[in-house]
Length: 316
Image 1 (tube, rainbow, N blue to C red):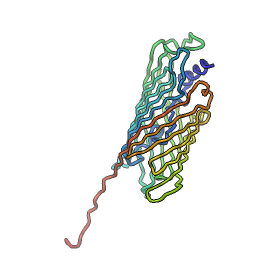
Image 2: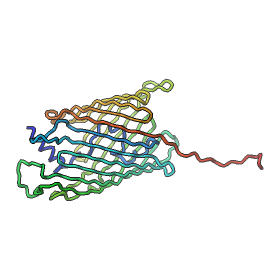
Image 3: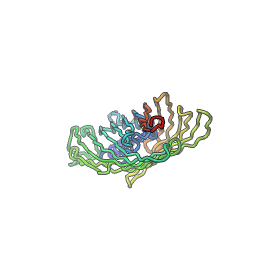
Image 4: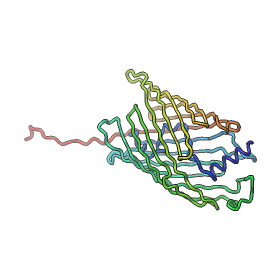
């Protein structure tokens, strides 16, 4: 049974690439990976790192670890003079014997609104993905497939484009919609043509202020992330409590996949978070769950104040 499950995982990533984007349980801590319109939305220079080990304990028949592993580094900031945001994501993802290394550059234009606590942005991102597959490590139930004759590590480079929009009202509500891999670009890797699927993301969250007294605050923040390629859909439902903009803890549920516990702290701009996913789907029989860590730092910046000239009748 375990061998069949492992074979199915390899096929899902290799032959039928559905939802092979990086999976993050703490997606709400930084939205730039899924939506370029979020870059620079925090009025700060932010640097973040996500590290995730999916489905702990998953091995092949030879004892090799084939659990998906992901590492995401990003940096983004507002450009006040251009009413814009700029960001970069570097993504490393390994699933079985398939490895991906990508770079994504994001830019957005932020529209000025009368209320300074509200913002709306339209963003675009260009990405370059280097994907490699070690064919020598793959084992199939029916060897000798004429399309899978390579016995070495092969790679290909795949460019693509993302688009997104984002709206937020500070400490009240936010939502965003994006389309990833619009071009559905492809590359020949070995004798196989690998094509990136087009994905659509929608995310939203709302801040319920349970208590506010002086500088103290207590929020409960439900959020939602929907992912779809128009054939399949996955939903992440999250709810967390945030105290005084310092401590937070929450739970998450991913349809037919996992339930997660998470917690974090923010200290002088430094943010730390961690989550543990308990696998609830078919892989629960061979998986010990998933772990994820987050480390980030935001340095708040302000636009330069322009001095306006004035006349003083005293000097007339």
